[in-house]
Length: 302
Image 1 (cartoon, rainbow, N blue to C red):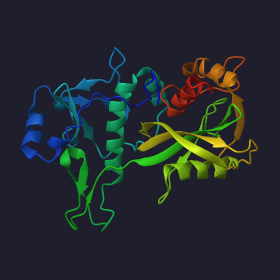
Image 2: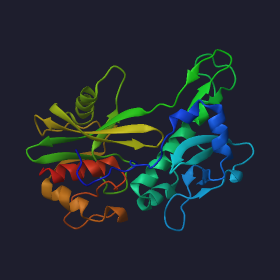
Image 3: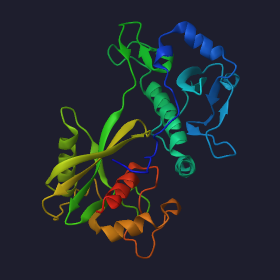
Image 4: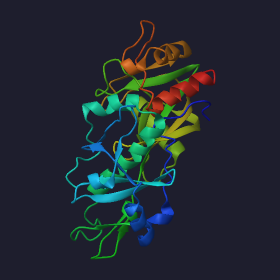
């Protein structure tokens, strides 16, 4: 539903090569391939090349104690990332990571997102969740773990999150959490709960956080979010009334913005984190799906 716009963290050139994951001989051949590349990381953050892209080295650069995870193939060349159990979890965000994301093209950020989320999943699932006995081991080239004590196999998961704009009378609702940079507002968001549809999650979150009853929930687009491993599902819904009752545990502030206000915020240089004099808020950065959602709303005429 988005024209001429690629949401952040999407469009990776990776062929995920599922066919190689359970083929021991093919995986060994990929590791022995002289063309194989290893993603260079600083902790769990990306290292950028001089041209502002992800930086890749040879497999020989991997620490002897690290385990190699197959990300996939790019132009037929195997690409790996190294798993070191001493790495920080992906939920830990360094101050530098968002500055780098401002520089990375969406397709490069998408490849990094896959690597970051995969590493984080392994860090969080080292021990068997079913029987709790000892370490589980890596299987399927890094895309699974198996407990030899009870035979349980686990696979990487993503957490679905709805992020939505509520519409009323030509305006949309924006809100901010206390952790946001000063002046930044975004779309409201929340995790989908077990036994709940996307539409039900949108309606529930808007009711719980803003006191809004909504209808006509429509899907717009989606985006991986590797902090640590969410799938952001962008939607828009129609509010029956503009009256707000905020959950102050979740939101510091929220207000309705018309088309001119959203356009001013989107045109104000969000990369620099500043608002123009006529912008009522600072928009989310381009790599965030909220930015895509605001752009979609503007493109369709508000």
